[in-house]
Image 1 (spheres, helix red, strand yellow):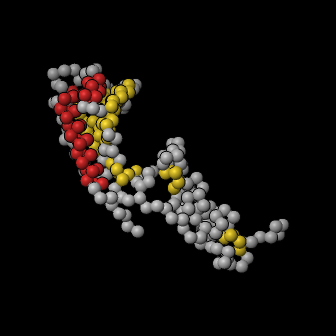
Image 2 (cartoon, one colour):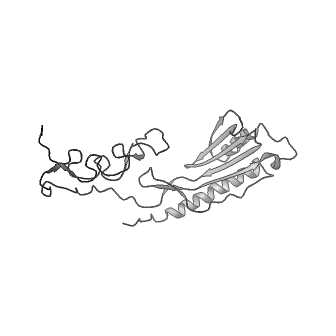
Length: 230
């Protein structure tokens, strides 16, 4: 069955991307006026398959070097992150500021702004004399949700072969009884990268580990009948 696109959803996502890029441009013009990147999205949006239905969003990321942006000043301006937070707050973003250990390879201060489920992140590195601008649109469902339908069993009591009995785990379903053949369940195990289960997100089925078939009968729905003690 093909996917049915939600009318107007893609246009809303592209509009949100334009708005995030405009906000980033406005911020950079005031924060690093000598170095304003061109913010634009390209290609397909990323997809989050942990939601039902899956959601899509665009992310844009640009890096500037403070030394090039402010040649008349020191390479690193200690108040840069604070000014970024103040500018975002003035634009109506709810801001937080995280101070990290400014070691090589890390960002010393990360300022995050949230507004209407969109996100802007400004990362400042006093070690590398860099500023990273990032923007992310809200997550948008582009396609109608298709409810899961429990599959028909591969074996029933009427279709059992002689000498076989229904699988005690799936009762003839053949598919994994935990996920009914989807491979994913709400609150399941996170992706292969690890992490903690989230009851509100889809994760790997803990019974079949995305193999989809019953782990006992391996999809046959039945098992050879054995007489106890035989």
